[in-house]
Image (tube, rainbow, N blue to C red):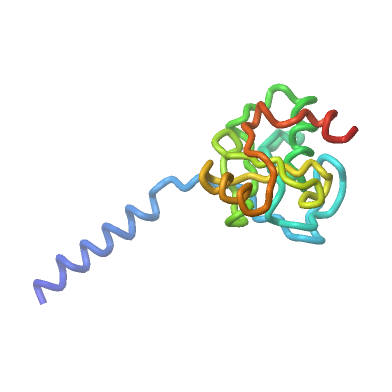
Length: 153
């Protein structure tokens, strides 16, 4: 019985450590047909594209969801206080949130995104290049992507 106690203590200590580890809290995944873009007002049609930013909404902080990366970029141009690190984009390969500042973007066919920007995000440059090789497009950095005005001409 004395051998069981140390094992139980180790398991409990590991469980407590896991509970106390800081996990960054992000927005919930967007729900197609339910969640609405804070930029253009359209309902999400594809959860693998889009973006989110944490911003003040009245007296509290809230996640604003965007159905297209370009909607976030348009919104962000009018809100210069929002840093790139505060923005998340949907990883097209995994349908999960990733940091916009470290994401690799692909400028793909406009029909792949709700607002026609064609901007897709990937967690790694290798995944972005693999997508380009299979589907076409071009890998671009956040600052190299066409401006929202250029996209919507």
